[in-house]
Image (cartoon, rainbow, N blue to C red; front, side, top):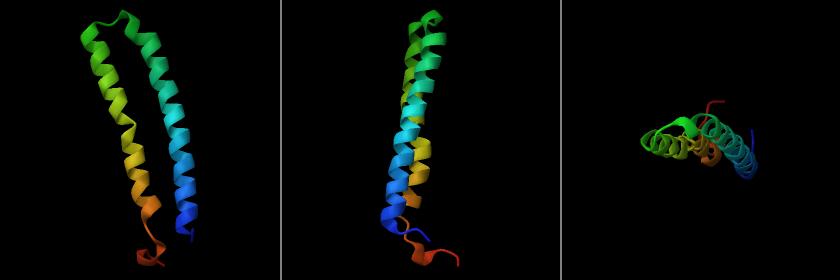
Length: 73
């Protein structure tokens, strides 16, 4: 069982890694696809890409803040 501080450290490191990897992928797609796209498509892409990163982080946060006392043994 991991202590709460260990879970928070692991979760924070995973979030930082995820954000860097996600940003690189999103930029790579943007550089390859968007120069040929219209302004509306570019706007929609960046609006979507700018919000989708939060889904994995939102799934990780409850795990980080859950204490081990209420889980299965």
